[in-house]
Image 1 (cartoon, rainbow, N blue to C red):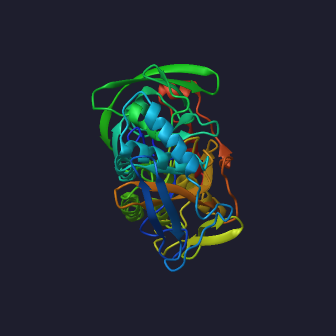
Image 2: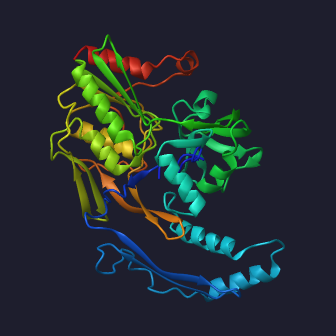
Image 3: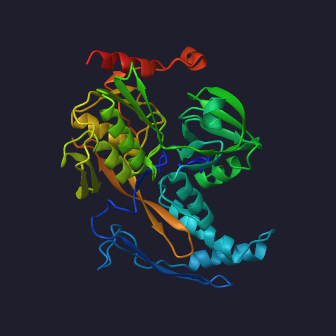
Length: 424
């Protein structure tokens, strides 16, 4: 989810992230249990357009391999050199060598035609990492590209200006401050939507393919904890809302689970609505709260080859408690991994609306200058072998939010979950 300003794969990065995305955590990469290294041998751009580069990926740390055997080991850069020379001699504007290099890197990542694979400059990478740590500046909406290359709202973040204004998951950005958003990359949209606290941005969105709506939103700086908890039904039901899978999610969720158990809570609602994803290892640790050690949570495959299987740890504080997981169109990526892990292992019922549908995983490869490549490395599959990419998860019990419910602030989905658990 990138953020608007994530998706997949970022938050506008404050309004920056597919569904921010399922991201293999640097703490425990999912491509392999061995260390993953990405070695860039060199990319050099001479003043007059001579570009010489060679890239190599080392998955084992010992030998050089590539999964794209259809690509040449070296590229003929003569056409690129010709383009560069023509641009240099004829462009009516000012360009720097760094701008050209950054453009080449962005273009190389974009050549995959994968909306979740992208190059990020040092500034863009810093914003992206900040979004994973729950630091938001802007309007607080996750942005993503859809299959038609439109920038869409993956999810408005809980408590954000975007949520207060009424933006919803799957809203398509038509204009930003009166200028067309069509053809923008996620990073470009993020830059346009973000701004200083107190300033305003005007957005026009298309909802449900037919309804065009205008929003004027005041930007803000927001620190949002990834986990919010409370008790419901006179203390019998513990409510855990996870807004994204961030650095603090593990600790906050575990503390909440421990307190619920000591307070006599007997049932749980896990709210993953409008959760665009985040770190896969965090999703694994969250899921483990309900599962027996060794239960399968998620499997990764490259083609037909299984590259990694993640299983539950021994922190199963909530095991045995009847649980409802709430989903909607903004639930994506790592959120979908958690939902299916609990459903397939028979420990939770899914309620709400069909989820986003992001069944691929990205790996972050940082470079020495602070820039990064976020690249799709695998597809993920649930314990029962389901991949939901571009399909989403259909809940066991569908409960839709109506326009009247939105306007009145009535949470029909949460109410349905409470009613269901009261019978358990």
